[in-house]
Length: 150
Image (cartoon, rainbow, N blue to C red):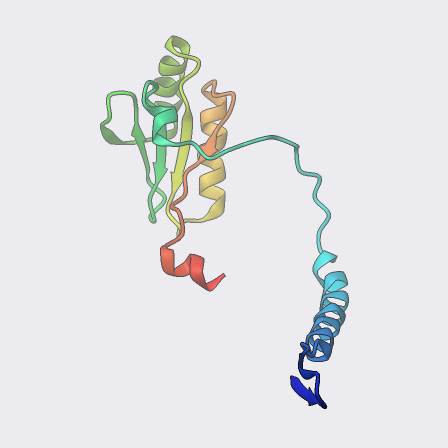
């Protein structure tokens, strides 16, 4: 606030007391909520420098995609790009044949958001039994409106 003092003129000083008050309130809030956020189940996650797969990463390699729809049916999209309904034995034989030919093929599981989680895990286990060393999960990126809310 500017003050007029005698003959010297105005003194322009910023009042920082409200900013300090706000900072202290925020500090107290963070100090109170941090212990609450750290409670939960202890999980020892593997360390990896992973990045999402982009279309450029998959351009020269055709991924094997096993989709699980809302009813729990499995669809296999092999290197040829066609989706066909398959059972567990077919997944083992066809994916095993593709991976025997090209071991560096990415193998992905695409599960419907309403399907039972156990069915998606079962699909991942089938792919590992077929010889896939790594199985990735496919997701959709969040909508732009969802990103702004966070």
